[in-house]
Image (cartoon, rainbow, N blue to C red):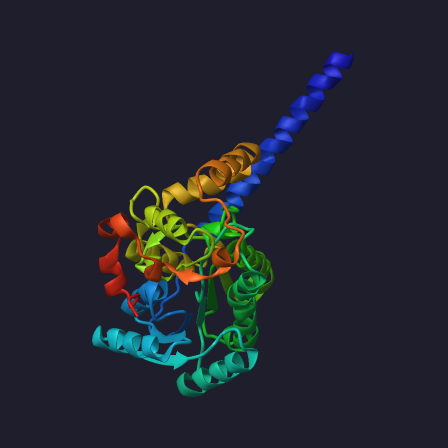
Length: 347
């Protein structure tokens, strides 16, 4: 009798597990169904939309008929991006705004909706990448990351939401987090802190705003060949940190094409999908981190202790430098320098 009872319980548990998997599969299928969402005539606001991935996203949205509003802090970047997009025949407004300033964000949304009469899609893409061993990282790095990657998107979503809720046919929000917002990567503690925070906000909003037909997509792309490799901010052993980051964007195995990533991200946004991780290698890495946490933790520990440069722990190591100022040395010919020129990343 005990043996029969045990077998019955195992059988019941198996059926429950199968039922759960079937339900999850159905939910995933329903979530991935492409919802018809025509971008023609819709206003798409892209923060950090004047260079790198942001500019690639603007071009892709523009090709699909959207009216573009690209936003950044640096006036010279804004002017160049506006000329680029207008030259390609896109309908574009370009604005200077620091998304870390809630008053500036409120003024931005008021200005855009006053000029265009609507706001249909918000893309939170503004970002900053800092690379340093934890012992050389500074508190200001963490504050900067949270201000840019979490508070900025939060300010913009709160201001935009009344307009998004009124958008005919529904609205979209595309939050560009990072692979580093799902998987903790050594030497990216400050960057990951802000990006993990954005993932949490984004996934919560997804659940709450579906009822208003505002569909939130959380994007976690990995390394991309967008030309941004010269803008990374490094501390510690500056030359070695720079070389390691450059090596990551130098090959197709460890990075992906910027235009291809942009197309996949816009596809996911238009379809209203919950998640998007461009690049098969990054999707597999995310799955492995969930399914084999002890193994991936051990691999990351090995990387941190035996491969990546050690902390300096001195005043010199705490100095922050941009990778373009440090220089990539022998690695330079292998980097996507053409993408940097094409995507407004050389300024």
